[in-house]
Image (cartoon, rainbow, N blue to C red):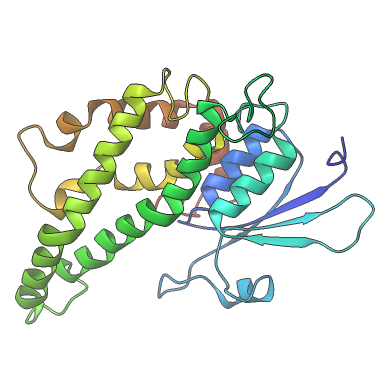
Amino acid sequence: MATENAKVKLYWLEKSRAQNILWLLEELKIEYEIETFRRGSDQLAPPELKKIHPLGKSPLVSVTPPGSSEPRVLAESGFITQYLSEHFGQETTMMPKRWKNGQEGKVGGETEEWLRWQYILHFVEGSFMSTLMMAVVVNMLKSNKVPFFIRPITGMVANQILSSFVLPTLKGQLAFLEKQLETSGGNFLCGKNLTSADVLISFGLVSIKDRLEEFGSWPAGGPKAVYPKLYSYIARLEAEPGYRRSIEKIKEIDSSLGIEY
């Protein structure tokens, strides 16, 4: 295999989606290096990451091809996930089989599992994470980080934004995921097997699962009652051996590093 001697390095930032990529590397069962970074007192990524990639974000992954001394730096979670899955995932379940037998290269010849996988990668990056981040940021206007004498005003503005736009959008996306799980034919979003699409979406779901009620009103029983399959799915993800290994890996390096956002 052409990737056997490739050198892979993860630049891992605490409390970031780099944790997704660490889990993915564990599932791919390849050798890799990891360099960890702490957030500053402002909770932003440290400037050292800009030496690796101009945007200074994390996750970042460098891949040095066999026979080369020049690493290729990959940025953006969705791109990293797809690249690693395509190049290193052939003997794993991380990327579903693309073509139906005898339909290779034909329009409409893709398997249902692959189409779901490809779509979820884009859904997470293009829709889901931006909605989650908007919810978290707007909700901060109600927190004690805002001076107490203007907090009633910022809180009122935040509640209006959350109730009129952010929460309805988020509820629609969570309902979509609930339906995907109902129709996948298995315990995961693409079917019977864990894929890198599940890994990619995990950080957002785990981070938000106990905070949804902060964003507005819910029917009796709260989000868990509205999306039972989704909450069972989150619990399955957290119980996955690779997920647990990725957490233990960071604890072994430095137990004071934050993992969940």
